[in-house]
Length: 310
Image (tube, rainbow, N blue to C red; front, side, top):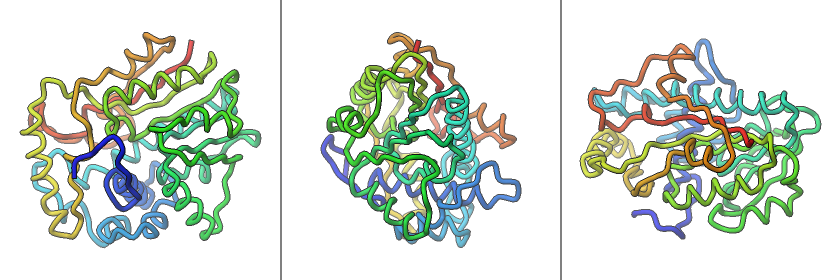
């Protein structure tokens, strides 16, 4: 079913299932011979969600090679390396912000992000997680069952980003007059273009000078042959459905001309530096994601921005 601006989901359906898929990729990356990241909570959280296909992938029972289409530039085979590089990027972003003296962090659309539990935060750091009530409650309850405890002061904001989350964040004690560090990881591709702009405006309004925003920016699809791209995506995920995982990625995003995140922020008082996924992979010793044509559906076009409020 195509997305609507008032739809809902849990961690096993629609956009929520992508958070579980990313956690499964982090679990695989954590088990690598020389792991780039360490997320001990990823696989247990995936198991708790209960999507059989993703549980089997996270545990190594099936591999990307079992379900990927030969020659496709998008599939499970590429995800563990891409998610390891992405996770390392945002881990370092928070470490650098803390070293610079920032003591409030905000994770937008936190999903199954366990950074509040696994990173080595300063003792006086406050971490705010924002996501839909059913998502944050599931993660809180599941991690409590594991005996996990946050490594910072964690304040959970149970609210949809389509609602008045800035007011809820302030009510939880967030101080907009003090520098803050924000991340928007795996989020913008699932927002309508205008909603992306509204969110960036809200973050700007809440960010004192010296604040930082780490974000994952998806490419503008204006001028792209969307029908051809959708057909390639359907073909690339055909074997997933044979294994019981029927998630149509073509229905998860929103079409339309999208502003470049770095340019948009820089015009509003930030200074941004971007790193494409291809560079992240190379910097961390991973092979490039193959891409036969410019219109192939891959993560190569994704750019990771670190922006600082002037």
